[in-house]
Length: 110
Image (cartoon, rainbow, N blue to C red):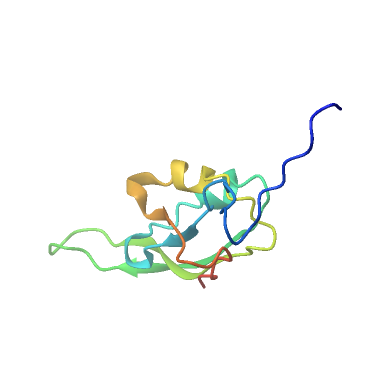
């Protein structure tokens, strides 16, 4: 109470801000549609739609296989708290985080 308050003047002194959360993105061509990111998200802000396709056998007399194909991957950034859990649980870093550009508001991926 005996000291005077000190206010930093904005244009002259830049405030120290926490690091920006960045942008969460997906490399769609590498996604196996394992749904780990959507299951582990505490905010339930990741939406994934997929379908199964039949893959013909590689060799004659082999069996057909089915695989998941990604139709839609969307993150609702209004709900996202940028915890990074989706990036940590994604196998082989198909889901990635990168620093955002000069803006602090992320762009959505769909």
